[in-house]
Image (cartoon, rainbow, N blue to C red; front, top):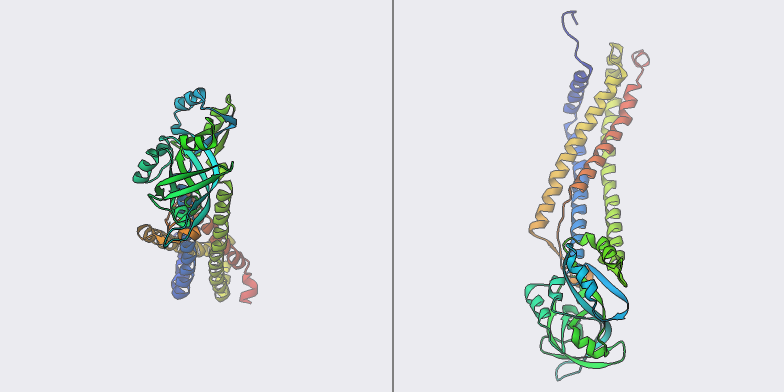
Length: 395
């Protein structure tokens, strides 16, 4: 090289070498990119479906469950003071006093139909419960219009008992008292556990059955369900009530969903690890094939950092291409299942359809972890290439 010709910068020289190496192994490089892309695609799709499953299950659960329950330490009449505090709290959207009981529902045998029986959790509520619970409009109107001696059954509970709108069922409550209730309608939340166990009647009906004028407490719907814990603490600080946010009621469910997501993410992430080994394999083969070329470069002045940078660039190009393609494929699958949700049997998975929910936090950590794994896979052969001794190879 003449004195008048400027020597290439190390970074540009490394990029030039990396591009030349990548151009020679197109088929193998394409397979490596596809391996990473498939791993990232499956990871994004799995996380999106898991997020959708968790979100749908929580939403279905909260349709027939209050965000916050304020339960009295001892049975007592409605509390005007507590109601004043609830109305003054801007976080509260709606509330209702309630009375809870458990009982056995039965339907006598009729001609052509066998008898039906099942256990239920029965709530006595006021018409305001229609604003506390988020049922479909027609079912919500039925709940608000419940009269004396009427009951609203969960859809799965109604099927189990064999009682539907207009039928009469018999109730044996926890205090061994009996009454007859007329089915005013059925409700569906999409959560099989609720639809198969819950029933609603008017507060007066349940109070008359229990021969009391007291209530169990209050059920509240909040503008933001995540504020249930804080709102409960504030409202019960000076009142003889205990706060029961929905996170505590369904804590086990939330923990199971979180564990499920972590396990799925870990198992699918192993695919990305395997694909990263593909990058390491490609670069390691390149080091073996180009040992003499590396030795010549070192002999004419190429530093260890230039050699390391060259192979790291090769690995990062393959990794970034795989990540980009994997993101596009993963988001494409998510978009497909958004348009056409996967149908599920409600009695097995609690919800009837599997929606998709893509979170940018998941995309961020998937790409960061994928990029970090790719970088580590590139460094191993890069350090091996930098360790080539020109004198021993060219001897």
